[in-house]
Amino acid sequence: MQTHRAPRVFVPALTPFHADLSVNQPAFIAFCRSLVSQGAGLAVFGTNSEANSLAFAEKMDLLDALADAGLPPAALLPGVGLCALPETIALTRRAVELGCAGTLTLPPFFFKPASDDGLFAYYANIIDGVGSAALRLYLYHIPQFTGVPITCTLIERLIKAYPQTVVGIKDSSGDWANTERMLREFPGFEVFPASESLLEKALPLGAAGCISATANVQPGAIVQALRLWGAPGFDAVQERLKEVRNLFQAHPMIPALKHVVARRLGEPGWRHVRPPFVAADAAWADALWERVALLNQDVEHA
Image (cartoon, rainbow, N blue to C red; front, side):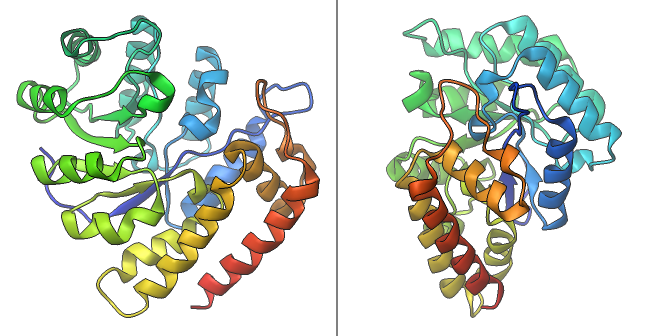
């Protein structure tokens, strides 16, 4: 299992699209570069990247494009979990070849119910299929979307079988009791809550940081909070982070995030989303942008 390291924030980076809904690769690379420059890592192809609206070939192309653009592999934690096991293995293998920090791996989510035996076999096949000691696999628990929970029993079994490979988890369940249980039962296992709002509760228990949708709009502030943990100033920054998070949770998350990024960059094309999402309604989204801009300014000067 992993040794202790400083808490980090990874961003499930938004994916920009052209008007025809093809991926805007230059805008994606520029956005990812900006996030990294503020101290964040990149959980590209996460839920808020519209990952399951991206084709396998698109993900492979974007991963290669990030590497070709010089983004540091150690900052990359790409989402690789797909229902088709061969595709998951291929994408995972490419991430390892590029030297990524790890992979964030959803369980297969179509055939339900999925037993712990079946899920263990899925992850074991990925690990054995990639066949590399360099693989660092992070589980991705988001049962409200997948309908397939990753239980503590399964985590324990995977850690025992692959202690150097299965090294962490993102808990997006929204159930603090579940996150707390993981933190207490698996010391040394890297547990990432899915919201910066939980940092004040999770960091004392050894959380690895967070992997948060709203890190797309406040990465530097989250990095600041992690650096201030245990020091004066943390509480004030944490409160602002929670205010921003709460603003977005009151709206459809991905369209809202894309609208704010579009306003911040002065690039209206960032508002494009792939169906079933629809672009944010400016009637509420412009007010959201103004409030977020003000709060982020307060954090930067805290």
